[in-house]
Length: 105
Image (cartoon, rainbow, N blue to C red; front, side, top):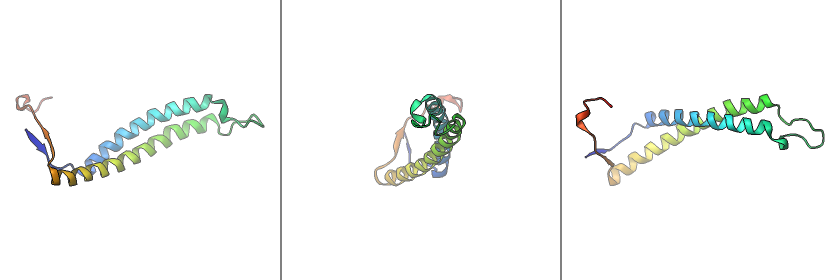
């Protein structure tokens, strides 16, 4: 068994940020599609849209992707830093690796 004693904080933040940005893109597309069809997104008095369909798509694609990416990056930084602190106190995660792979996965 080997023990993971420490994570590179910045590398975890970058990977986490990318993964969250991909999730944000998916959620943003779903949100924009739902909001484009939502009748409650229209002003009940005039019947006009509060936001155009293009605005929903721009917010959904760019807003969610960037927002989730930033949150993922920050959460990755905080999570890796906390892991490093707790791993010093109580030990890291024990992992068993297969040495027979010869560097191939």
